[in-house]
Image (cartoon, rainbow over all chains, first blue to last red; front, side, top):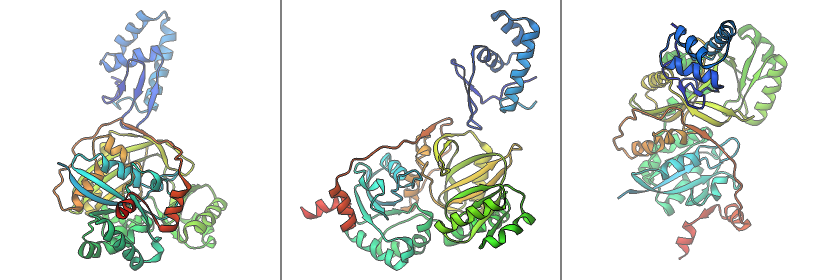
Length: 82
Length: 357
């Protein structure tokens, strides 16, 4: 299961801080929602279904953007290596 | 009641390549155990710390390091006869050798205490000896070589792959991508800081730094890792953030345990994408960003003073992660009379008024 590193801080405003590298990021609303769900330990299926109930988006578009987003999180070393 | 101490501090050049004097003083003024009177020791009349009267109580000019230990000792003895200094904290690499040499004599004859690395530690960590230091203490250090002439530049390609870092023996570093750039930086740095020039293999990764204090017995009293967030064109941190980096803390801990480092220090590393730490430099004194450690809950300069006084110091076990420092510049408005006083009499501050009354 892809998960967010435990020490990554995500604020209500969508500000993300990685205390190991010192990197910080600003997310938009959708990104913030996804990261919060990941931080709550939700599975990929739960994240997808929850976000799709909050936003008017078709499955294919959401999947494409979701995997792009995950790839970006991985590049920035915000994900656990499991 | 707080203990009254008179502490002499150098490094008042709070400029774009700042000395650590002013942040060290701020740390000491924050002490909950000491009530400090600060004696600033300056080299030039335009060091901003001289004119920061809420930071420094009295300033004395001291001779440049190249004047030699006897001349410096005489000046310190004179200042001590007026100020009765308890502890002296030198903050410049270039002056440390003299103060390390004078430390025993200052303590015996003047009752001034210091807490400095040994001459052996100071020399061993020198940029030109760093690779050997790394081998001895089990640390990863990029390959490096001293050169004394630009005639040696073409042969570098046999031992190094470009880019390389061209460094002065005390200060300055530039990344060079070809022979021509090495030669240009060689001449530039040699003209300012002299020879030799150190060529170091460039390592790709993120620069991370750590400020630490060793007790001389192999114990790390405290340490705070930091990553620079904003770097000036001189390569200095203008903003930084404290990190949760266990690997970096372990690097510092094992380096201090192995070398029995005595005193404050800054370790500069490159962390690679494979989480390997390459040691780039050991600065044998606190860095100019040491006040971040105070902000994170570790008053390392205060702990250094306690060690200098022979007091027991508990290890710091924690610090605040994600705390930032942001430097700023501030124009001090100074009367010409003050500039005149420091320039002509070599001192400025409250002591002369006290002596006159």
